[in-house]
Image (cartoon, rainbow, N blue to C red; front, side, top):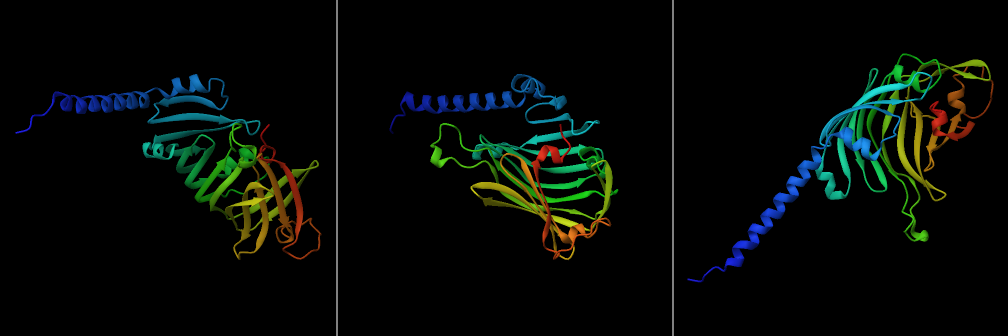
Length: 274
């Protein structure tokens, strides 16, 4: 009967010791307080008020200065470790602010971030905090929205192979029943009755830029306008004659699909952020 060498017993034992050490280190990292990680890697962030829990599961109270009264809410996360196989940190998140409720997955990679299957509603109170308009008391429904934004290749990459920053994937839709909207301009408030509409999200590439395209449609699938967000977070707005006809003071004459308003500005300005 062949004898088993002593070294054949030692090798498996060393392997299991190594596996055990790796698993212990992983679980030790997961139990680190989230507040300690935030203080170490983002000590001066003005948007986080309080953090509890650990890397595996926790919550945060956040505040964004979008207006004179900051928008405040909470977010809870539950880590999804299998995303590490794709080189990303992923978590299931629940976001709340006023009556706003959103749920989905968030993934963060070296040069990108991604939102998957985000659904819920954005309450009118939240909208009123973001834009200085008179808005109807109707929420925006968020239906399976997915976004992926690339920050661009690193500086060490070959310049000719450098990928443009921007939105490389987008899907899902937003729906809104509309109502009367009053918006200030030039010291006067203009009113427009917004129809029932939906916003179809997609990613497009134009002029070597990866753009987020938000296609605005009415409930007859007729075009109301287009919004584009580029890699520098610049917002391009194009509104059609069909939408502007809902404004009593508007007297323009054009085919309904004709773009009659075009504006380009930083996205933060469109949201009323300083």
